[in-house]
Length: 178
Image (cartoon, rainbow, N blue to C red; front, side, top):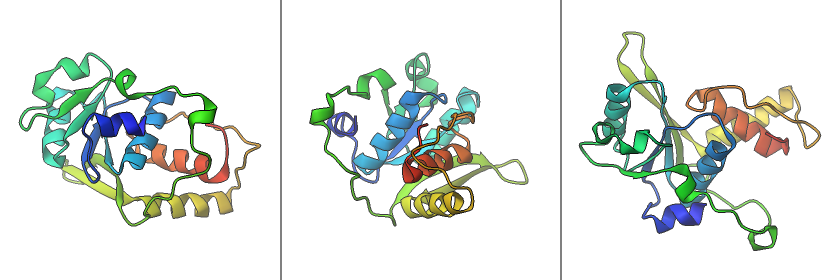
């Protein structure tokens, strides 16, 4: 999936808007963005066209990954025009033998995610997290409330919510099923 994102033209450091529900393919696409070196900008699909379009422009996203009908709505991506992808275009199903074993080494100091929100005055605000902040946050949380490969966690928060990436990392670090 990361290779498909790169083949589609995604560059390291590029900001990619993810306008996705809390489903399995969202987690796969988030991990693909990390492996491709992109910065995942998690946006609220219920935010409305004006808010989503503003966030895409303000964050400088070069790509938008969203299920239809979002990719077909040009007012969300202009200006500048973000290249649109449906999740199904990028998700690759490969036999287990074709997947490299182990966890790829990723630089912990690079930007990983941007969460959109509002400040106390109701203005748009954006919070940038590095891979390291997610990783070490997950390690600390797992130390306080241990999860392991014997656990399963229900993905029950909206994907754009800041807690969602923390949950994904806790499961990755602890080896739990998500």
